[in-house]
Image (cartoon, rainbow, N blue to C red):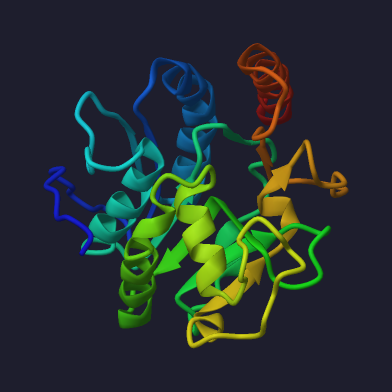
Length: 232
């Protein structure tokens, strides 16, 4: 089971935007992305939980799995939890993500256009509080053989949605009992710059897959300046 943690959460809103940074390089990225998240959350009346942790939430697993622990914990306090990877940035704060919420499902994620079926990326992960959300998070956690996969919890999530090989978008074998628990987010909420054609007006940029950490950091800083001009 997903371990319990105590982070001293005191909710002021039914919605929280959250992220984690354990390593030094991701803390630098979070310093940038957090400024955009704090602006966005204040604009739309959401809480934030942007954590720089010295101690892991699940020390027996790779760092990416801490995301699952945090999501489950925050669902004890919030109706909706919005996870953003530390290497994302809200580039356009003018669109309210709440307009996209589908409360009939447990989770919402963007799918990348190169895949013929729903093939989610967990860099932006909207989770609505209900029993199915907890069930699906626990099922992700239970995929222990994927603990050290290079996609970690994302590989587990994709496999649960019917993919024999989480890394092969053509290995889809059909819907599973979990498929109806998940619905898509528009790609503008998780535009992965190294993979996706840029939407006309993206809301969140995702910097996964850049050739080097330095390249990623430079691009995030450049786009942050664009964000500042947009809100000035």
